[in-house]
Length: 143
Image (cartoon, rainbow, N blue to C red; front, side):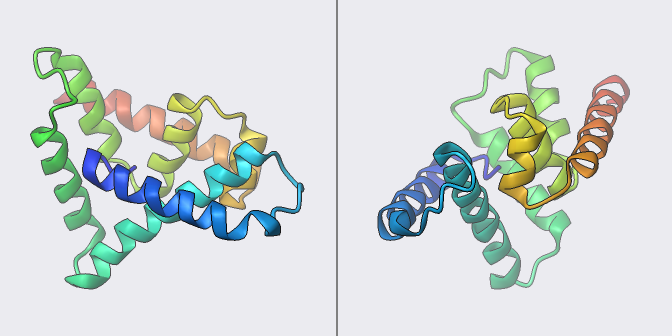
């Protein structure tokens, strides 16, 4: 979600701190991994939202910043043009769709788990995932 390796490390550190401080609050209403995903997702979104608030930037500006970080990343194989387009397409998605897509596609979570992580309804998530796939396909075919 945060794209850059440095930001991911910052988020990861915050996630581990929150887990350590709040493990006693884990109520076993979901699996431990789902609880951790929720913490990680919230921390990622907190970081992105703090960027919006710091400079009072729009969501589009944050997406542009993420796209810039993607292009500067050492972890992308720039010779694989399709992989680069795929990553750009994901970053062009609205935040909610990008979040659902990442949790489903990369993390291979079931919709029920994603619903717990995002505190959302399964049907809504399925629609978001479907729209995300369509937008990614359109982005890749038309750019």
